[in-house]
Length: 300
Ligand SMILES: C[S@@+](CC[C@H](N)C(=O)[O-])C[C@H]1O[C@@H](n2cnc3c(N)ncnc32)[C@H](O)[C@@H]1O
Image (cartoon, rainbow, N blue to C red; front, side, top):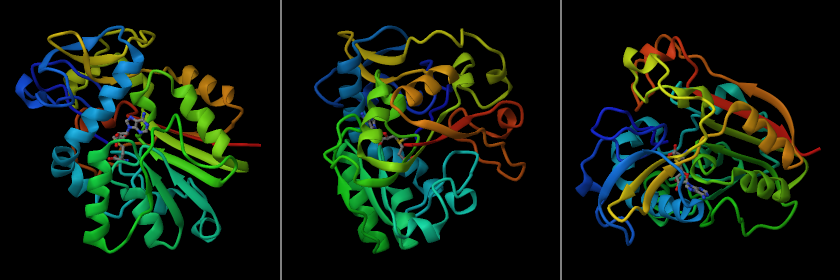
């Protein structure tokens, strides 16, 4: 969960981006040039999604240096609010999960799957960015908990139809593709009937507000209904990094359109004892506005 702040020279949104870095920090990311512009605009979705995977690959180590302590190596937090699977049981109780096949998509360094494995659950992680896959292997060695990993885009999983009981992601995959419907459809394909799909994303409401954890982030500055993605582009106009907005109703349509039934939604409240600031998330805004949406669905 990158969840960058709006503290730098470039306006940026929810979970990723250059975190106010100067242009040189993205030089060398893929075959594109340095960061030139950031903002909300129409982009070539296919190029943007591929570039964003590349961005995550190159940014993996910096991201983990900055956020790795909070994420842990074998810990399962759904969101910056701090909700843990150990308390929320959104995937089901561990007693049931221990006899289930569990898939994580957009797993990053697979901290959540590693926690599940530490609890005796057969979790498989999938992640497209090479840098993240490498980081996951490093955390496997450091913890002695090996997470099986498939390097794959969540829109095209090299897994058999009906082979999984549970699938999930904590801020992975969905915000980084122009066609999240394909992620839901692919998850529905690999789930067995009765299987469960749970995902957390930036709360859609946040897109109307500056990505700032302070009171400056409490005044809406753009339309919630503006679906143009947040994109960072190089001097040639090629996208280096992008995030795509879905309204609440869009998320519902996307999930239902994939043949899944929504069984629950959560908007975790900011706990007063949580003093952490992570990008646009923090206690000041957290006590007034939701920062995360978690959706649970089933294949019936
Ligand atoms: C914010 S991280 C979430 C992972 C982990 N839960 C964390 O908090 O670090 C976002 C992840 O989504 C992955 N991602 C980006 N595009 C993707 C795609 N098309 N399919 C699957 N995952 C993707 C990124 O590579 C990155 O590892």
